[in-house]
Image (cartoon, rainbow, N blue to C red; front, top):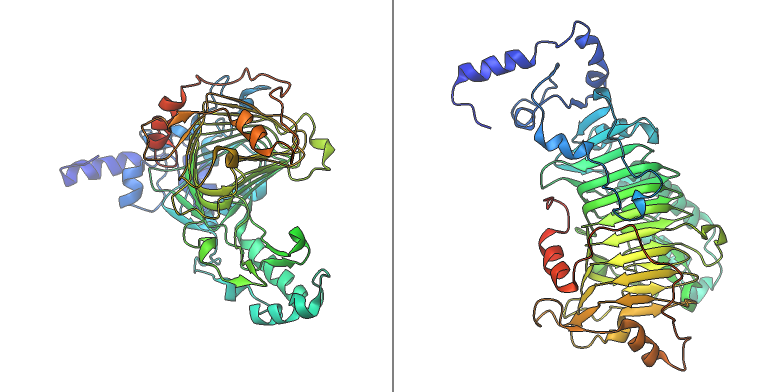
Length: 476
């Protein structure tokens, strides 16, 4: 919006600053005290006049998505009353945040008070209370150093025992300092949305622990970077580095809708990290992990990119309490340059439809896309896989103790083939034929048929739509 005359601008400001009610000054004191901007302020005025303005004003069109709720039948998160997030929040609990400090105050320690949090610009979690940038050296304490750590736990001298002693204790203390800054608790009845097409939450791990009724939309979540990975000598028989943070982690969370988000390692890709003890020194865990009996989740129109382990649904073969839970819908998402776990599933009934997978030509570390694990029940429909020539159809699926996979309408081919992802393929038949004699065949009967879903497009239509529309800043 542009005002051509100073007089018009002055008049507008005068109207905005007049309290709508006699007690308006009192009611806005809380927002002023926290430093969070009133949602009554139009976005074009916020940009020009950053101080909070009191009183009622014309609605801000950018705030509208904060009141959105999940549509009926849009996946598992629509079950059991649906997912409404913070849509019922009163004006005192609608915030626009531009810094970590403002975001922390708006989250209110993970309280269940209905709230809408609008992220403007880039918010960096690795900052101190004054907003100054923090790096790994700022978190290190008690004499921790990567050189000292490597010397202490070199397998040639330390052996296969779990790390212990001064350097491991120092690593844990240093890790706790970073976790205090970047792990952000998200409580029930919360909506977090990005403003415009450039909202970024950098370096943070959103933690939905035991939360119910949460919406995250139109936001880029980038680089949940672990400064202090731990060495695990016996992982995989060779040892490996384990990292701590997911961009979003659901633990015992229910009724969650994640829509039009972009999740990646942008800024610190793992493939450029050094190799220690013969293993890549990974700095990132999952992009979105759904574990510990989380349930009724819909992930739609989102983009997962440039990452190793993208999405874990169910974290343990022995977590039998997950039975009957971990019900997740994934539709119209793009997985690009993802090495594995897109997703890997244990126990859950997962509806996987109209998703687009892109494996780049130079992806020599690619492992698989769909992971079929203990008691999983994946119902996959009309998904598209673009892969280079050295990746076979049988490589797209991997099983660990899995028994079943329903698939239909799958298309596969090179990115250079015609639109629609190339050619129709039967993932199940090809997987079973390729692995016959070495692994148990998967059956097509997963024991359920999805009923909660939006229109299921053809694979060709979904391929084009997702390429254009998935990810942050691409709301229709």
